[in-house]
Image (cartoon, rainbow, N blue to C red; front, top):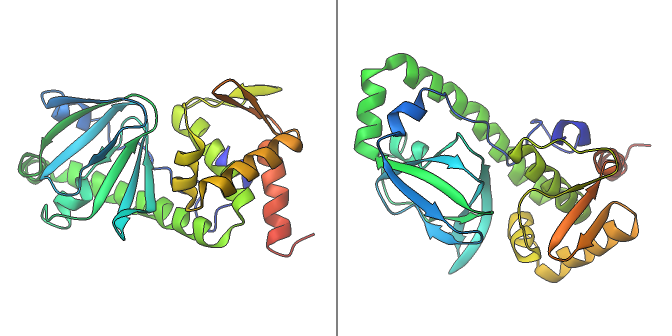
Length: 238
């Protein structure tokens, strides 16, 4: 869906990380279970731990000016949270927080245990570092989209990212957004005000691309193509 919308600059998955090597599932199987309710905010940049997202979706942010600054990535099931901090930054504290977009289940091990496991399995370390490069590209592209793309495109693209994260295709007609995301959460993701995102959601609804039913949002199957056209126009195309 994100690739179909063609709104990224050099990645087909702005913000959204790809799952890490499946062998990490066994490594984390004995880790401490950690559950987060939908909309929970939690700190992960200060502890020396690595988490594997077992189910759900986690958005990560840099703290700035006493509050949430910029979103740095969307972590779906199968991704590792805090692993770059353990591998590259030796587990040093970093100003990072996360929000559970819907209910989340994770497994947690210490940064030392993670580093030791990679030292014992060089091929797994190599696979992780290769995936890290790809995921960093998605994260950088997400920052570029948030800085350069109009809010209409950012808002619509984030809705598509939620489908992509859940592995849920758009059905013909209308599809319910698979996570209970709020306008406040979308505004944090898009680095915009809540009122501005609410206006963009209303504009999408007026254009026949979005419906609200109670607390649920429904997206039209025409949204990716509409975003692709908007992106082409924003970049000075036909």
